[in-house]
Image (cartoon, rainbow, N blue to C red; front, top):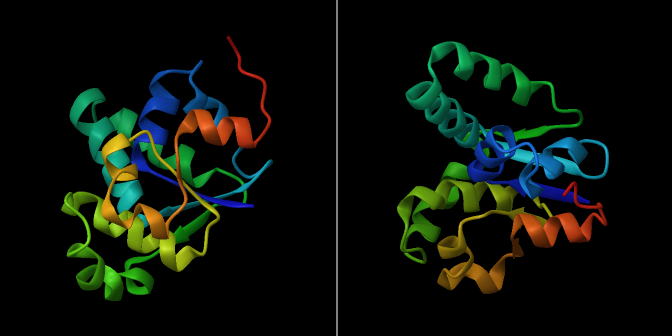
Length: 143
């Protein structure tokens, strides 16, 4: 099973160690094949750099790259879909994530972004919340 992990899974999973997002990150590469894009890495690192400083951003960058079985989708593989999908989505920040997810052939798109899961494109994609995905993994909650 492959799952594309949205930026917010890393932010919530790293900042809240008892969240479903943290559980998902703990299971990544063990219970499922995690997929992200280079765009995801950039967003996560920038978020930590802006809020926690450069050292924290560097640590997160290295943490991401240590995830077992991690598949990273590079722009060259999904940028060609950007124009096609931009017109189907209200939030242009999420277009590259959706394009990378489509090209990756992942089974799930895991996101805490409720707005993204309600986009017109939802019928073509398997958007799930961190809670739903944790249930799919049959992982006992930590709390």
